[in-house]
Length: 241
Image (cartoon, rainbow, N blue to C red):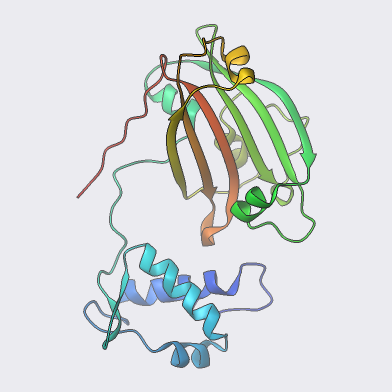
């Protein structure tokens, strides 16, 4: 694809970023050179300058472009930096360690998303989310409380079997391919509900992970908030320089 198409559901800035990413990889926009100006790109692809700015921002975040005062926007590498970390769900991560888990679904229902979740998932107007509340168990003990929010457009239904890995269900049953995710990791004291469901004392901290997972063209597929027992789990990641 070397153009943008207003008839497609994919936002124009994502389509444009895909085209530009391809031109960078092929050398059409060579490393060390500047890309065309915002105005030139807007005219070339028949889009607004705001759309161009969003596309450039995405590619800058990926590490492909960098703005330089008085020069323009430079191509600084042909491919995004290799990330050693691999996106896996909690279940898949534990499976890699040889640990079997099972998820108990406490509730699964469609609901109206909060403004924060609506923003994270970039929902279309009036689109609801499937809200899953699950407890993930290992060796008969509760490990994590998971609140997942999936756009209604994905096609998951409340009566599906959510005991296994959610990513595998999405990819196998709904033929969608999850590409990457963005995590925010923290720690805090547990809430009353978390203490009850995870069977921990009020002085046992929980590891918190907020993740947005994405399909191709940067389409959000899931937003999840996880509260994980710190005495049973640690988050390991390998970083490249």
